[in-house]
Amino acid sequence: MNEANKLLEKYKAGKCTSEEQMLLRKWFHHLGEDETSELTEEDLIAARRSFEKNVAGLTGGWQRTWMPMLAAAAVLVVISAGIYFYTDYSNGPEETYANVDGQTDITPGGNKAVLILADGSRISLTDAKNGELAEQSGMKITKAEDGQLIYTVSNSGNSSQPLSYNTIETPAGGQYRVNLPDGSRVWLNSASSLRYPVRFVGNERKVQITGEAYFEVASDKTMPFKVVSNDQIVEVLGTHFNVMAYPDESSTNTTLLEGSVKIVKENKSKVISPGQQAKIQNGNIDVVAVDTEEVTAWKNGYFIFKSEDIQSIMRQVCRWYNTEVEYHGNISGKVFGGKISRSRNISDVLEILESTGSLHFTIVNGNAPGQERRIVVMP
Image (tube, rainbow, N blue to C red):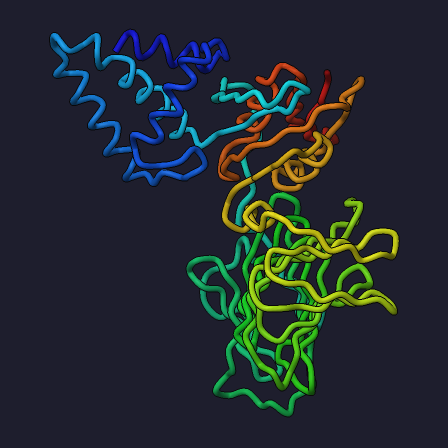
């Protein structure tokens, strides 16, 4: 156990030899997993118990078995932390793991949103109790136990009532899920909004978003579904796709996971297939192949970065943790990659970035009136 702890601390400090790092990788294969697979909590518990049992029973075979056991100890603790990051240098990636050090911290976001009804009244979905919230245009609006908003036809409703529109807004540090009247499901990322009719009529289903949203559109060939964002229109019949249209990003990105969609920008249009992304930048539509897991990681509770610069990473991090960022000195020239749960405190994200040795971070958690929460980034 002492040797296991020593190796773990050595790895956390980034001082393991290449041979020791290779042992860690082999342990993944020992578990029947590859390096990028996620292990469930049950997997971790079972592996940890096996490790403890084997170490407790070691006798004369110690010399032949201690290194795999050390690898087990190190990897289990690292995986339990749910953190993996690396920095790309000219000589290739360097893998780095880290844990929380107890510094001033900022907690992650959660299910937070405001529902704006047609009459302008606002309902805080963060504070509202579960159950029926309102009734409009023959539709009942309900907040479910799992925090999602659901629209259903009301028994007392009159479909001839004037059509009204609702808007749901998530703040920085918020996210929310909406079940639309047609059965389509929408996940809203932080600092986003969705405007939609409380019931769909006519020959199309049209909604408008700002920020980022993931759509699972209910199929209806007689009534195409359209998403409007940043002067682009995404036309679909029934499919799964992600739209990222934040004003502080350099492009509007539509990523397709299932089905087929057409992207329209003024007099230009492109049809994309699953695994492709349409990027609108400077009036042009470019289609590229992308990793859909990375694009939709936010919906599944993760940050996944692949060869991204620090500015891009910090824009995503700051939206989720509702904080500002401040840059000092020259921070260009390096790109980062990795994966971490969005349920962890911001210090986890910053510490693993800092542990690469190329950047330093300071958390300014302003609690006094007029003070802003911000992250200072320095070389």
